[in-house]
Image 1 (cartoon, one colour):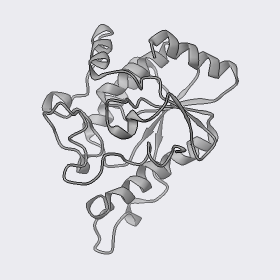
Image 2 (cartoon, rainbow, N blue to C red):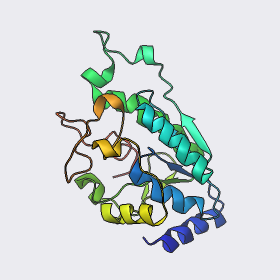
Image 3 (tube, one colour):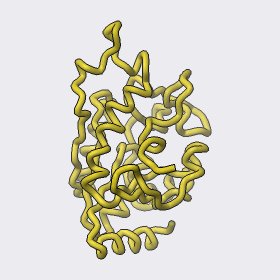
Length: 217
């Protein structure tokens, strides 16, 4: 979708009385959509899923972007405290069961927002992985919210060009080869054409669950 189409759709949602939020991981590729929404005239909240395992640079970047774009950011935490996120050996689940770790810290954290809000905006793109390539611009969730994927057809190049055109800063770790940045224990730098190749290296895993569990197939 083009920028004016995205804004037009957001205005339609607002005119229908829908309550809107966008989830953001505050990576470099997250910023164009946040910028578009901040200039749309639409009322929305930003939900940042704070797993407690983020790079300090991500938290700093989140605060920088929130100030720059004057965003209202909700810092969402898992309802499961960290001392209950360990296996029988006392290890955090990201070491022994990363899928369950993602469920506790991401999926379970976001679910209440899908009951409270009508529209969930997120910045997934079809070129990121095969699962996302199969998605449509709108989709339903098992809860009550509708998913809206306005930049599904954008490319890495378009993200870069938009950011440069609007003089938007990059995540500080990008210059070290981190092009897709999640939780610190499960993210590595990856000088590769695949921007997500640094996520869950060595594991049979490409998604955290937000875009597999929280969508009706």
